[in-house]
Length: 112
Image 1 (cartoon, rainbow, N blue to C red):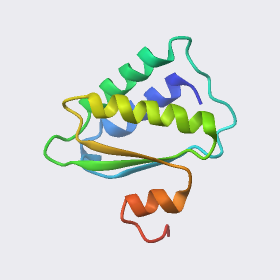
Image 2: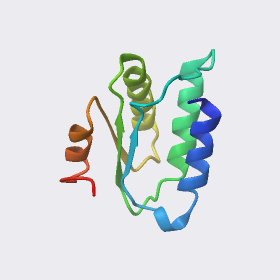
Image 3: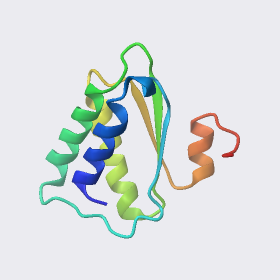
Image 4: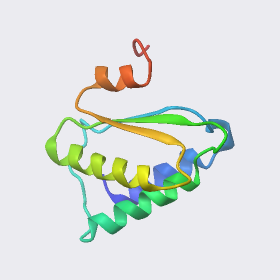
């Protein structure tokens, strides 16, 4: 998984008005490799900033990230922190080690 892939997903999915206000679940437990930019902090801040510009201000939502591995968990927590610092962000981000924890955060009993 690379930064361009994350940006492509963000732009492709969250630029659609019909998904405004939806909760989101990203599970990275099967990602084999993360391609990390040299300047991770500033790039992560830019991703969080761009993501927050696509939030529906009138429809707050939740974003759960499942990241069981230590490195992915740390990157997800960095994203969560930068996202929380964005004044226009209306998504509540949670980072979890397991899918059941993330589903609980999203108030989902089971996946069908």
